[in-house]
Amino acid sequence: MFPYLLVGMLLGSCYCSKEGSMTLGRPELSGPSLAMVTDIITFDCLLSIYPKKETILLELFKEGNRDKLLGVYSSSNASFPLIVKASHDGNLECVARVQNNSHVEPSVSYTHNLKVIEPVAGAEVIIQSGAEEFFEGRTLELKCTLTAGNHVSYKWLLNGQPVLQSPLNNVANDHLFINRATSADSGLYMCVATNKYNTTTVFTSNSSEVEITVKDVVSNPAISFKVLKENSNNYFAVVTCQSTRGTLPITFSLYNRTELAFNKTVEERKVNFKVPLDLDRHSGWLQCQANNADEVAYSQRLPLQVVSVGGPVMLRYDYDIGQNYAVIGLRLYCKTRKGSHPRYQWFLNQTLLQGRGSFYYVVNQPPDQSILLLSVGRSSAGTYHCEVSDIFDNTTAMSSNKQYIDKMVLNRLPVSVVAVVFGCFIFLVVLVSACCFLGVLFRGRKSGKESLRSQEMETFAVYEDELEMSEYREDNDVVMSARCDEFDWVSKTSEDEVCGRPADGL
Ligand SMILES: *[C@@H]1O[C@H](CO)[C@@H](O)[C@H](O)[C@H]1NC(C)=O
Ligand SMILES: *[C@@H]1O[C@H](CO)[C@@H](O)[C@H](O)[C@H]1NC(C)=O
Ligand SMILES: *[C@@H]1O[C@H](CO)[C@@H](O)[C@H](O)[C@H]1NC(C)=O
Ligand SMILES: *[C@@H]1O[C@H](CO)[C@@H](O)[C@H](O)[C@H]1NC(C)=O
Ligand SMILES: *[C@@H]1O[C@H](CO)[C@@H](O)[C@H](O)[C@H]1NC(C)=O
Ligand SMILES: *[C@@H]1O[C@H](CO)[C@@H](O)[C@H](O)[C@H]1NC(C)=O
Ligand SMILES: *[C@@H]1O[C@H](CO)[C@@H](O)[C@H](O)[C@H]1NC(C)=O
Image (cartoon, rainbow, N blue to C red; front, side):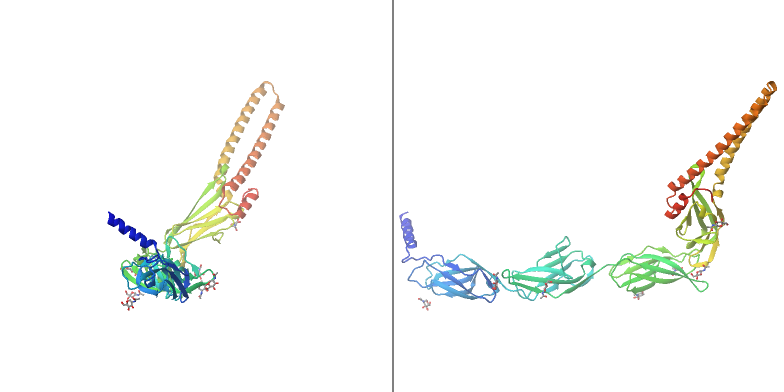
């Protein structure tokens, strides 16, 4: 126990007294904390506590790297001049030791941080994902490399606009990732590298622009065909294959089932193939294929069959009835027995009706039928018929029966009903009159009052006139209101015409 205490006391006395001390105090390192590359700066290192007889050596190191001496000074108060290099960036430390005496432990200063700014230079975009041209869905990865610079911040530009962070875009410092790229990600990419010394001294290096092209895979084409008649009896199907998207060029192929019939590479999203055609015969199943990448896009299969129109052409109609049995709207239907490519045409008094007019509306439902919607009015009266021809050959036109239509014809049924009702009424009047007459005759035989009988007959006649007129008026009012309410497919002008005037017949 005693020897230990002695040693302890001895050590304590050595440490406390400056004179003859055998340990080293902690050196103090001071200097600038910010510098630019190639600046010349000075670090000071001061050691206060040391054995005076010994020669003191002060050394400057980067923390953790004792192999590379940055400066050495044989004194207890050193001043290290330093030409700043990028590698000096970080924590520096000063080490004090006693020369030619390994018995005294060296001591180390607290670290001093030096931030070295090396201006950025030589920015360049590297395509890490490989090709500058590729198909949508892949990931684009770009990297910004520099020949010089530290403490750098990066900015990515696409066509001069910043690329922002998003679920698909990952802007990670010198890397840019664009996941599931689309053609919207095509353009000129550039990186801008920046570092700054202080608020006024900022360094920037712009890369040159790199063009990236993201190509769209071609979409499934639509297939359709038109019939073309050449000379007298040569028919062709002009088959159209059309895709809505896809980067050009596109190779379109036309298959007859599994057999390649035609192919063509074009600088548009549409192509026509001219295929010989026999009418009224099934000429196979056609399919378009479109290709601008490794994958092929397919259309539906379309039967190539053209049936020419064949009679008879049937015309029929039905109608909408308003209140009081008045016809307010009419639908005429035109149909052929056969024909896959019919053209329907409607005529009123030999005048062609097309599209939409003041009192009509043509609704084509090819190839099945065509419907002519009519509002019943003064201008729609006349003789109607329809004609059907092959759309590709108007010499094949066939006509339907002619149908005369006006309000009188249409309301024939209600008129007969009115006639029956009116007939019954007359019958009733006659019956009552007869009864009265007989009664009067019977009573007259008893009393012989002739004057009374003639007076009664007059009253009946007046009553009858009044009834007829009121019935007529009421009928007209109802017809008008029914037209205005229910006939909503009639255009504005025709509605004015129909509703503005009294419905006084056609
Ligand atoms: C230290 O030792 C070296 C050789 O080991 C010698 O050259 C030098 O003179 C010595 N320095 C002092 C201060 O003793
Ligand atoms: C920034 O650093 C430059 C170069 O050392 C110097 O000229 C300028 O005065 C500094 N500006 C500020 C705001 O410290
Ligand atoms: C670098 O790019 C930035 C941003 O587009 C621009 O403001 C600057 O002028 C460019 N500098 C050079 C040297 O091209
Ligand atoms: C068209 O088909 C032929 C025969 O299969 C083929 O040799 C040719 O390369 C194709 N052309 C195009 C543009 O695909
Ligand atoms: C398609 O193939 C069928 C059977 O091989 C043939 O009869 C028909 O003419 C072909 N159609 C076209 C348009 O080549
Ligand atoms: C059509 O002809 C009939 C007589 O045949 C005529 O009453 C009617 O006003 C004509 N209609 C049109 C719209 O020309
Ligand atoms: C038939 O069609 C041709 C070409 O489309 C046209 O020139 C001709 O006038 C038409 N003929 C008839 C009767 O419509």
